[in-house]
Image (cartoon, rainbow, N blue to C red; front, top):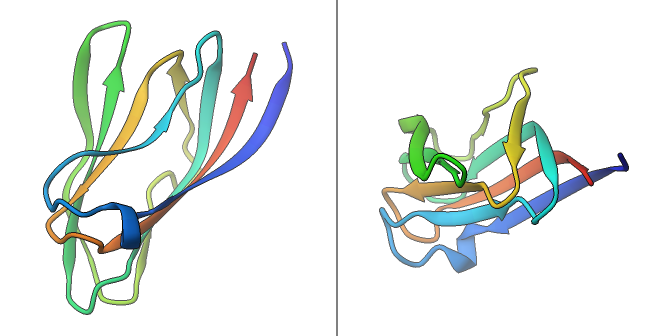
Length: 114
């Protein structure tokens, strides 16, 4: 099994144009397992924003909340993993929604195993 350390970014300041919609920030490639070891969301807006993070489990055919309606202060970031790890399987997705369009950036630190 080969491991590849990755940093994935999502520029929500530009790409997140529809508030409250789910934006897919990462999809596990086919034939891979991914270990998420870091996840930070930054508030780019000039006011508070509320964000939710969802995980789509492709095998189970369901989407669940990891965080729901968490407030991020102006100019602040939220580190979601805080030393925890999460295993994601092929075709699983990580999604973020916000109360304000173009209001956040996200950085994920991952280990992809092939």
